Amino acid sequence: MSYQTITLVKEAGVVTLTINRPPLNPLNSQFFRELDRVVAEIGGDQEVRVLIITGAGEKAFAAGADVTEMVDLTPLEMYDFCRLSLAAYNRLENLDKPTIAAVNGLALGGGCELALACDFRLAAETARFALPEINLGIIPGGGGTQRLPRLIGTARARELLFLGEMIDAATAREYGLVNRVVPGNALLSEAGKLAEKLLAKPPVAQRMLKMALNNGMNMDLPAALLFELESFLLAFGSADRVEGFRALLEKRKPEFKGK
Image (tube, rainbow, N blue to C red; front, side, top):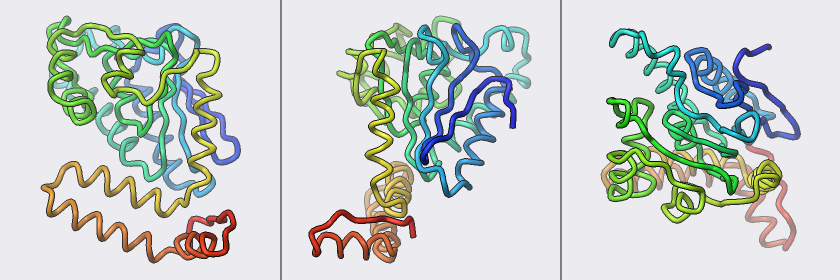
C-alpha cells in the first residue's frame, strides 16, 4: 500500500515508520489518517513486534501540525482535525506492542505530542522539544496537556505549557521527557538495539504490562492494583510463562512464542 505522508520499512519483526514531509515534516490530516491506519494494521499483524517512528531528514522529527491546513479552518472543522489526531495518537498509545519515538530534530506541538504517545523516546543530541501553542493563542489539542504532566509531573509541565519555550535534548532527558540522548548519527542504530531487546521479551507479558500501565494511570489505586492482578494472571496463564519458568530452572535462554 502506498502512502502520501509516510514511508514504512518492515524487517525482522520491527516496523520503522518515517514521517516523510521534509524538511519540517508538518502533520496534516492525511498524516493522521495514515498513521491511524498503519497502527491498526500493525496491531493485527502477528509478525510485527515493535514500531519505531522517526522523521525524514535531520532537521525535524515533526515541527508541529500543518498550519497551512489549519489557518482557515472554522472551529467545527478544527474539531474534526483534532479528532483525527486524537484518534491516531490514542490508537498508538494503546497499541499492544512497544513503540519507540526516535526524535531526530525538532519535536514541536503535535510532533511532541506524537512522541508522548510512544512508550520510549530516544533523542538525537540536536533534538529540540516544545509545546508552543500558547504563543499562537491556542493550547495543545493532541493530548499535550494530559500526557505531558503524567510523564514529567505538573510543575515542569506547567512551565513548558504556559511559557511555550523550547528545551534541548539534555534538558528533556533531565525532565524525564526522553529516555536517552544519543549522537544523531547513532539514533536509528540505538533505536534498533532497543527494539532487539524488546523482541527478546515475551509478547503476552508485554501486552499485559502495557495494559496495566495505560489503564492503571486512569484508575484510583485500589482499582489499578486489582487490574494489575488480573493482567498478571493473564500473563501467568500463557505458554510464555511456562517457558520462562522452565528456562530459569533449566538455566537456559527462554524461547518465547507469544502464546
